[in-house]
Length: 108
Image 1 (cartoon, helix red, strand yellow):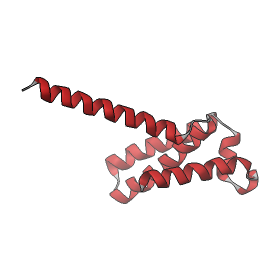
Image 2 (cartoon, helix red, strand yellow; image 1 turned 30 degrees about the vertical axis):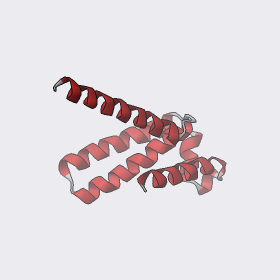
Image 3 (cartoon, helix red, strand yellow; image 1 turned 90 degrees about the vertical axis):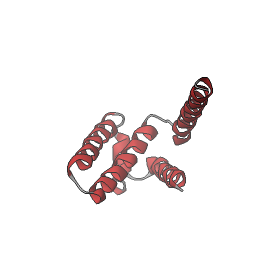
Image 4 (tube, one colour; image 1 turned 180 degrees about the horizontal axis):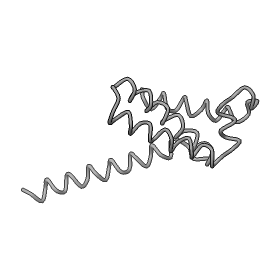
């Protein structure tokens, strides 16, 4: 379900490239890419870290949602498809699983 939500949000962000700037915050961010989206991503990352250290769970959840949105805007601004990132994660997970299996086999 989470991948579906991120994929749907990524598609909305992509569609906003053709929205009127006065109607879309996302379009305004994309118009100033890559600098503005990257700065916003950095700001959101700091806010997530602060929420993780000093705020409650709800604040952390909200800030993380903001971070994911801005990450998707950065990816769109650089024409990186979310599926490319998800495929990379899949590959890394597979490598981790293979490494763990090798360690288990070697320790026998």
